[in-house]
Image (cartoon, rainbow, N blue to C red; front, side):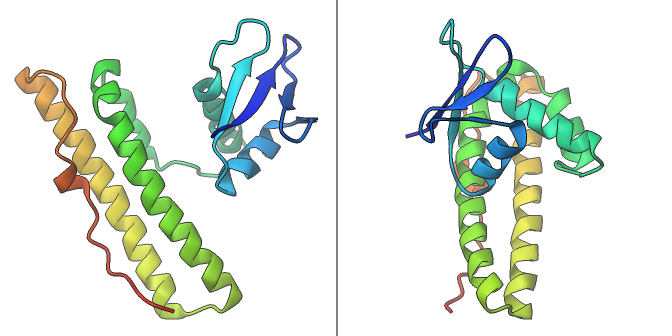
Amino acid sequence: MARRIKRYDNRKLYDTEASEYVSLSDLAALVREGETVEVVDNGTGEDLTAQTLTQIILEEGRSGRQVIPSDLLHQLLRRSEAALDTGLGQIRSTIDDLMQGSVDRLKRLVQSPRAQELDELRTQLRQLEHQLSVLLDELDEREAAGVPDEAPSHTEATPSTPRTTS
């Protein structure tokens, strides 16, 4: 279940689980630690999660930190809302699974660094970026061909990354 964050009219964010006000950087840290957050307008109940996470990405970009590669941002902006809605859930799920696996492996590496595992993680991240690009290209092709909206083939986007044992 998502961690509920209320946003008040004064733009303050309140973490209902921790019973305290939080900043955008606090939210970013929660997400990086694996938490799923749900940001809602306290008055209307409107879901503001996407807007808030986008704001975090923008602010981190302003501080000089590259959050998302420019090529990927260009591809996302070129997609219509309908095309993104079609495959976004599947893409998000695939990315979440891959990222969680990578985060778990990184935690192990922090405790005992291994060069081979770091190289494998870099390879996996490059594969993930390539697979996301393939999925987005497939969405473009379907849209250009006038194919009815449906999720892209999951088999093409499923990573075939080797598993290593520690």
